[in-house]
Length: 266
Image 1 (cartoon, rainbow, N blue to C red):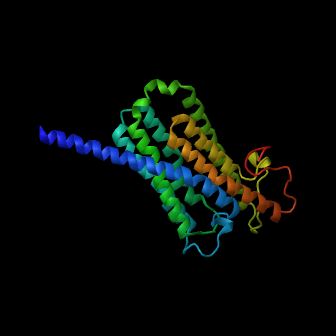
Image 2 (cartoon, helix red, strand yellow):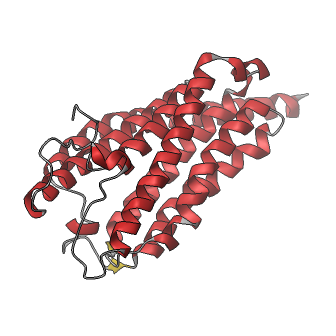
Image 3 (cartoon, helix red, strand yellow):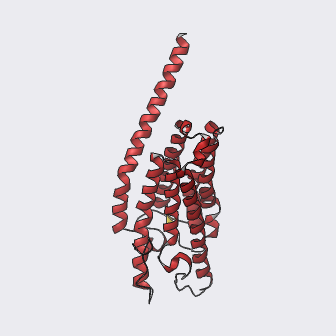
């Protein structure tokens, strides 16, 4: 009897502590997102064309992408163990993996650019993906009961899943066009495609990835889903603006009507 009570008390205390840590981490990330956004508007993250000294050893970009993106895929395998009987949550997890398996294990080998990245950027991205996977995965474990089978017919699931798929496909097409433009220009002169969404914005790959995670947020209707979308904007919107300004300064005849991130608007 006493052993049973102590066991239940320990389980309750452990869960309470985990939820307290989870809440604190959630609000910390929520506060950091606008700060990161403001910093990146002024100082582009130092990888790609913006790489510069002072951020640690330079690492091969393919290895870097694998190391920093793989936790988002591997850690989100854990919820399958706890909620494998909930079909809706399993679909969520499959959709998540649909992006991150490609991003961690296939995308690095498609990179044509030989630009490498600083070790510190890889470490920062690694820890973000660990925290982000924890926040989203733990929420689904604790709240799987709010996703009954009929949830698949809800407006937010249909809309969110559609946006995610459209964003994913647009992102892959944008990457493909960018790779092909580099293949067709062996002299190394930088150029931007003039097809698809590139006719309207400088960075359709960033825009479409943001659409993906907006779709995720709408689909799961969960605080960590919306937090992830805000972080996506905080990271990608400033980088799109930096790219857009760089193109205008360095590419002769760059279209003045083209926007940076959002067609016809921004």
